[in-house]
Length: 104
Image (cartoon, rainbow, N blue to C red):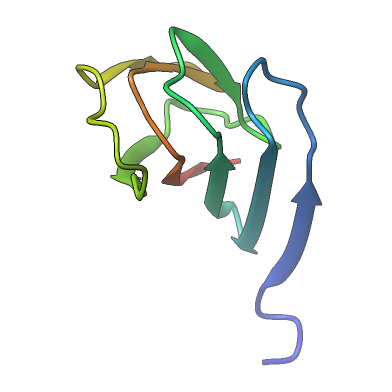
């Protein structure tokens, strides 16, 4: 069981306008990668491409949790189709958490 999975952490692995911090935690079991990405931003972000810290072999499943703790209401949230290495989002305010699951 010791080598059942691997774990890697990536801190500020991408430079994105209006994003103060981006952290990813990647758990790998065989050819399956489960990635948690936390994005922190002090204001509403416009259309932005979020890069994954790893590249997937097939389109991954992606889900979001809006972490909006700011007092201003968020804009209309937009989540585009995923790519093998990124996804385009818009309208998040204060940050969000993304879960990405797919084959590597």
